[in-house]
Length: 84
Image (tube, rainbow, N blue to C red):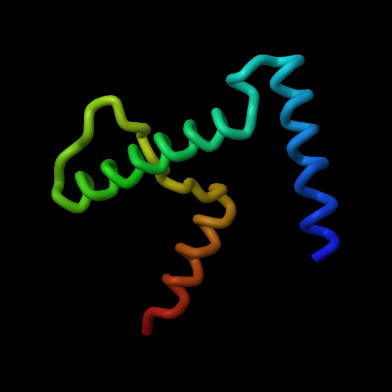
């Protein structure tokens, strides 16, 4: 319990100092609001993607992962070797 009671006031003071130097938009509350909006947009995108549509103004989501050509070539060779 001592860690919670020691860390909480330190975090509060640190956040206050950051907001004083960088403004309200740099504080933890503003950051959590941005995170909530981002997660809601991602949730809408995922639901629209499952329905086959797109949500205008929502983040693009994750793109296709591209493999290095050497890894792709070795995977192709291995698949060719496995065939009888």
